[in-house]
Image 1: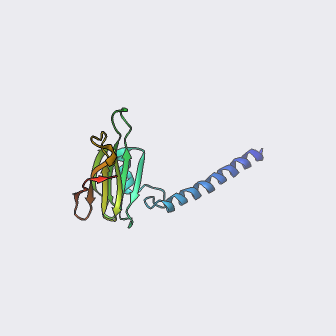
Image 2: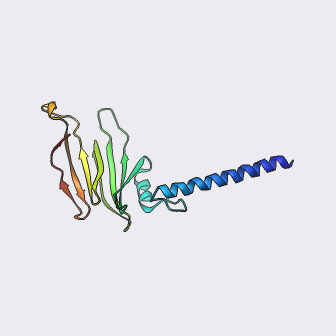
Image 3: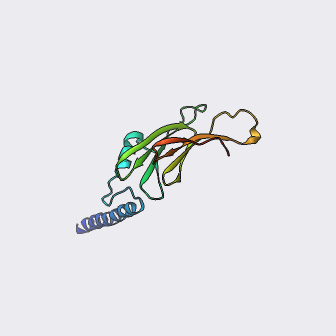
Length: 152
C-alpha cells in the first residue's frame, strides 16, 4: 500500500524539480520575462492586441522592442498584413504602431526601424529587380523618414 503513495510522491517531486528549473531557464533567456515567470508589460500589451503568433525584436541596447504579428492570409489574392508596434521598455509606452501588407520590419540601428514594403504586382521591366518601398521610423525624432526607392 505504501508503494503507490511513494511512487506518486516521487513523481510530484520530480515534476516540481524539473518544472521550476525550466521556468528559471526561460526567465534568463528572455529579458522580458521576469524571474517569477510573469510577462513584461510589452508582452501584456502585445497579447491584448494580437493574442498569439507574436515575435519580439529588441534593439542592441534592449531599451526598445518591436512586437510583430503577421495576420492570417484572408485569401490567396490578398497578402498577409504585418502588424507591429515599437515599445519603450523604460517608460512602458507604445511609441508607434502600424500595419502594412507584405512588410518586413527590422532594426537598422538602436533608434531607427526600417519598414520595407514589397509591392504585390510589379509593373515594368522585371530585370530591374523587386522595388522596395517603405519608411524608416526614427524613435528620437518621433516621426517617419523617407526610405526612398531601393532595388533588391
